[in-house]
Image (cartoon, rainbow, N blue to C red; front, side, top):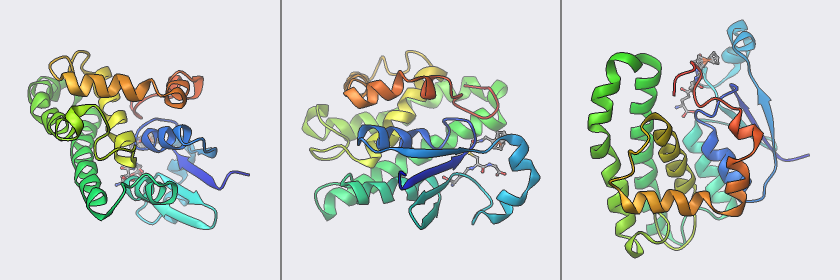
Length: 210
Ligand code: 6SG
């Protein structure tokens, strides 16, 4: 039995980055899908540390908070940089991913119709830091930090992929980001994951908006 279990709603949401990480690292995991009906019963919610999903199990260890889960997998599977400094730079990159993910979630779940135009207008400003970070590491030809893939790369890749759905062409003015998405998406196990029915049939968000 795989040691990993993801307990989450039937969406990509806050779990697709960890799924991509596990798939790319050749790990298997179990999915426990929580429907709206099950969640609204309330007993699972009441049992969750922050009354939210995802919940993640690694053997006997139960975790909450998607970024803590990504970092745990980063530490466990050697995806947290080569030294202390790289780990810190990865934290900085991942916190930036989280900031934009929160803006995205606010748009999707609270302000989709009225907020769309403003979001699109501000988007280049929010994408630029990632182009800058990449450009500072081997001219953008490598990963977000250092010479090896990290938990933050999977999180950034997912963030960029969902923005390409929200705003097709949003990376056109960012050559380094565009090449990064193409390069990472072409990694054989990521490609297999991204073209799998499991991924393709899973909605990005819980309210049908994307
Ligand atoms: C929502 O926000 O899927 N968890 C969400 N919502 C349910 O009762 N900081 C942490 C982290 O990084 C944030 C957790 C996150 O892990 S994720 C949660 O638990 C609650 O608060 C986005 C997502 N949304 C889908 C959703 C959940 C409830 C309403 C919409 C779909 C519809 C009903 C159930 C599933 Fe639905």
